[in-house]
Amino acid sequence: MPTNLSLTLDNPSAVFFAGQTVSGHLTVTCTNDKTFREITIKFHGFSKVHWTERKSERREGKTVTKTVHYRSSEDYYGSSILVWGTGQESTLPAGTHNFNFSYVLPQNIPSSFESKIGQVRHVCKAKINVPWGFDKTCSQPYSVNSLYDLNTDPAAQHPIQCNEHKYLCCLWCKSGPLSMVLRVSRSGYVPGEKIMINAECSNKTNDVVDYTEANIHQIVKYRAQGKTKSIDRKVAEIKRPAIAAGDDDIWSGVALLIPALPPSKLIFCNNIDIYYTFKFKVSPSGCHSNLDYKVPLIIGSIPLREHFPMFRPAALPQPQPVMPLPSAPSTFGPTAPPAGFSVDPYNPNVPPPQPGFVAPSAPVFPGVQHYPDLPPPSYNECMFGADGIEEDSDDESGGMFAPKYASYNLSMAAPPPYNESMLPPNMNPGGGMSVQPY
Figure (spheres, rainbow, N blue to C red):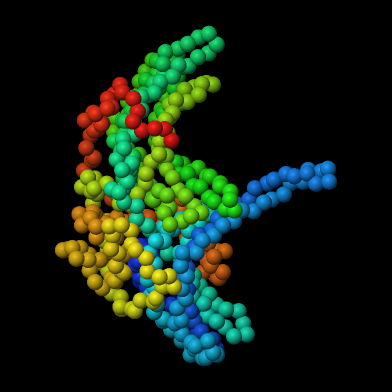
């Protein structure tokens, strides 16, 4: 029977922040004595981008089409830990062997991200060096979350608002106006929050409006070899039914949930950028163009301070006892943590300094160190689901992986109803826009 090996993390959610410790154990099972040189565990954080384009060119009077590949990559950290052996041939006795490991993540590393074109991945990989044979390996990916504090971005407070109208013309006929007034109290949100949409859609035309819709889009920009490629993905939407000619449709506090997503900008990554937009659309029937409005939306990982009371703490299971382990040194020198934060390595045996707080199944959220009244989030899989990581695992353990992101849990109490006092002084229901279209 072949030698089996598996990696198990002490943190079952496999979510970490920069400066925290990834710890666990490697289990190796041998049915008889085996000769190996060494057993190592490597920690690696990296990004890679790859896409292709078809291009045509003239060769000897003929048009030839070829496929051009664009690639780029970045390494954020890489360190190997020797857990058994010396590099010389040695015998590992038959049986099951557990090897503990521990590694402190460096500062200034980007959040995990998965897509078909580009990825940011954080992986630990165990390898048995087999003399005169094929090495045995297994991999364990884990999620890293970076911090985007909405309180440090003034744009997060900006309201989203517009007052737009258009006339539907057909030859010499001109109908009444198609109009919309849109009001949303701010531009910055965190996963788990709801955008409360207030809008008045008035159809004074002679045609039916097929539907009205509010949606959120994720725009990902990939960079490689001096080229840029953008991909637009819809991540949330609400669609309302038709509006008859002469009728109105009122959106009064209609909620649009922010799903589990990586923060805006994907900081510390230079070949992948992430942006979000909010779009409101009124779609008339026939050949008429839509009346729509699009603005930037900011997705963070720490909510605006005044909205902390809207959240409740994530449900926290009892911690599993873990033997303290020495930290393995990083191959990268120490760097400063994000402004306003002091991130300590996670130790599940040392509870946080808040009374009655139970150690979570994920590392202590660094945001609570700067905001003690911030309810800690839960960690949910990305809304796009899992992607294959076989090309980076190089072993039978390779499979599907979905990164997890901080997501907040709303309390049972509803957010305060919208009223005109929420608007800045220069905006009223008949006023103009203070946020420019994206």
